[in-house]
Length: 341
Image 1 (cartoon, one colour):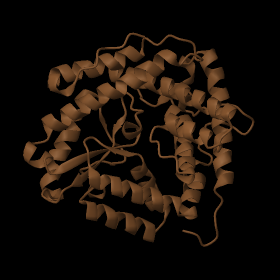
Image 2 (spheres, helix red, strand yellow; image 1 turned 90 degrees about the vertical axis):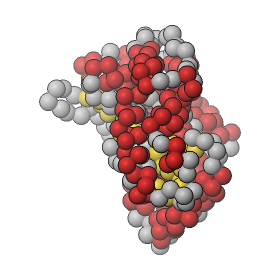
Image 3 (tube, rainbow, N blue to C red; image 1 turned 90 degrees about the horizontal axis):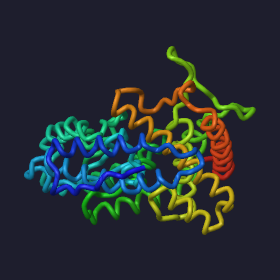
Image 4 (cartoon, rainbow, N blue to C red; image 1 turned 45 degrees about the vertical axis):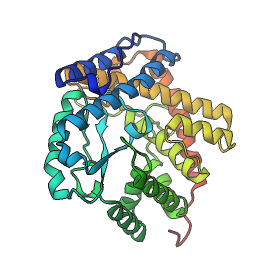
């Protein structure tokens, strides 16, 4: 797989940025290695994170007026924060305001930023986890107040918001966010109820595997398909994050969290290696779907059964069994404590 050259934000304009985004997406389609060889793709993924950050920095500097941007800090959420972005990944982000820019002043420029970034391969978050949503915008005081509100009413919605805020990194240095992040992590770690909710409401029964070990293909008018994110990747990423919180593993990237858990002997090394293989397999499948979606407008998450070679189907089944074992592990590790929060 030949990697495009990484272009830095100062050397980009809108036309070139769109071209660069397309080139990195097309490079994924050159991956013709066996389903067992993730090395070429891993080089692409690590390099792509650097290019993705440069595209994001370019868009933030170009599409948001200086008068607004100077009072705001962009906080990457989700896969972008973990360094796991793919060509069609959502534009999940939060905003910390220094108090000189209000939400009313920022909302229109931020909405315009979101609309414009689609040309660079950044899709608007379908769940509206973005700065133009007041839930994801605020001063440090707003953020601390929000966290306390979630902890005071620890339903599944509040739990999800706190877990989303766990995977977050500022695009530029932001000292206030460091304190916010520590608070989010400590409140989650101290709440058996929040941890139970993620295990049993967020992870349990999400792996796409039938009880007898067969792939759980979903039916659609155009044929059977498999949702790579929801049925394979998300259960693994969420499970590793949950274990990392409980074990106080500070790493952000899922693979780094997995390594930390192994070093702490919270996971068996052989099983951890199998989980790592499942992650890389899932990212490769999803990256290919994203690249095809960017090129032809197909669905960026659905892997059609009829287009998946038998060797890849066999590998998928093996990796799903690993994901299922991980799912069962976290469900046993985080039982519901009666009356706990």
